[in-house]
Amino acid sequence: MNTEATDIVVVGSGGAGLIAALAARAAGAAEVVVLERSSFLGGTTAVSGGMLWVPNNHHMVDSDMSDSAEEALAYLSRLTMGQVDEPLITTFVEMAPVMLRFLESQAAVRLVPVMRPDYHPDWPGGKPGGRSLDNEPFDTSVLGPLAAHLRKGPHFPPITYGERKQWGSPENFDWGLIAERIERRIVTLGGALVGGLLKGCLDHNVSFRLNARVRRLILDGETVAGVETEDTGGHRASLLARHAVILATGGFEWNPAMKRAFLRGPEEGPVSPPWNEGDGILMGMEVGAALANMGEAWWVPVIQIPGEEYDGRPLFRHLVDERCRPGAILVNRLGRRFVNEAANYNDMGKAFHFFDTSTYSFVNNPAFLVFDHHYKERYPILAVTPKDPVPPWIARADSLEGLARVLGIQPEGLVETAAHFSRHANNGHDPLFGRGQTANDRYYGDPSHHPNPCLAPLEVPPFYGLRVAVGSLGTKGGLLTDSRGAVCHVSGRTIRGLYACGNVMASAMGPGYPGAGGTLGPGLTFGYLAGRAAAESRR
Image 1 (cartoon, rainbow, N blue to C red):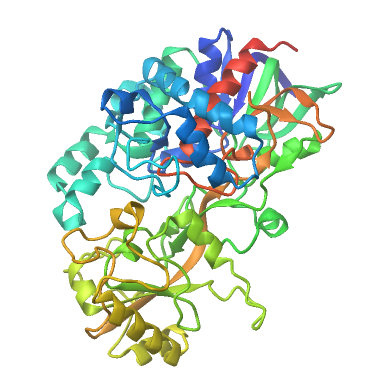
Image 2 (spheres, rainbow, N blue to C red; image 1 turned 120 degrees about the vertical axis):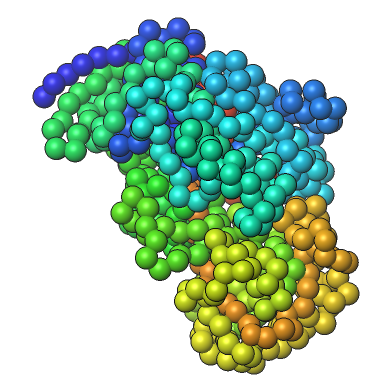
């Protein structure tokens, strides 16, 4: 078996792993190697919206938006529900703004704050905007040959978050600008974040190896001393680490056995690349790592369009705008609404996991998005514009009773629910769930619709519906770490030479999701801290 050595080994090339590599080099590590299991760099970050949630960041200060560490701590203390050690939350609040300045100074990443509310803006410490940061477009030509290995996402055209909000419906997009960006290989969102991090890594002489799956950690006594890799041909090699190994391998949302063993309820559709099979967590467990938060994921409602694939696996699409706009409701198989449709997607996942003791089932999964013809003529549904014909994956019927029979919903329940909802929606009220009352609810509503941008009756036939299941952006439970990213042993000590960040690490957000960018803000912060700590360590 071939054996090599370097200072620091980073396993995984998502945003957390890349900033860990960059921070390690900036902190003095002479040699840093990033290992990527697949043929493309960027992991889940590259296919994501790419936003960072960073409280009390300098862009807010520059824009005269108020924030403070105290407000962020108050907000996160409620959000995490006592499920996260306080030092981890405190470290995030203190170091996230420091990470951001490092990121913008050492990588080709340019970020701007957006007026996207926190997911609970009405809570103490919540904010109406500024903590979520959007990426400016990134020109991949500066990456040279590495540009061909930047993972491309299946979900978004190359537009910024701000442009998407400004333009609204796809029929209003500037498709000329989009075509120009595609031709020039300019990327946005998560692709821009990864591209900028890759440029920073290249400028700091970080090395990359593709198609290198790490199979196990190499121990020297109780210290992690390196990794054993396997290429696509099955050939094994050892890469020793003079300082440390940093795991940034993502979650376990594509590992059915681990999902059955750990998650709080069903998870039917990951929207991440199909390479996150829990490799880092399993390797950590083999050397005695402690675990935390394993029942949780970054929950989202998803739709699967028949026949769509990504990297040879089924493609699941995240349902966001469609459920928030006026004229649509989400019901369970009994035809009953069970959640505020405009709530943030992570909290909504918990409602999908309600267990009904009478039927001995998760009665809200799957659910069904139901809307009328007035809605169909006004709003896009995923990639289907109002002018497009109705595709076969959207059910259609001339009555609500008929639609219920097509979808497998109890007809009397759906008819009663729609009548109750429509009666109150005409007056802009939702007595069951208060939909449209918060700034977060209204963000994806229709501002031209009054009196409530999220509510309109379902009255105009024909009626339409589609199946919605609970999925995830990725899992958020994993290796328990200290506030520097050092992995903890089940005995309570830290495992010398081993660090973790990103979704392989037990999230500092616990069961919650603070706002847009709430995965990547903490992920990059603890990646930055892990990289610095690893560079300062010695075996």
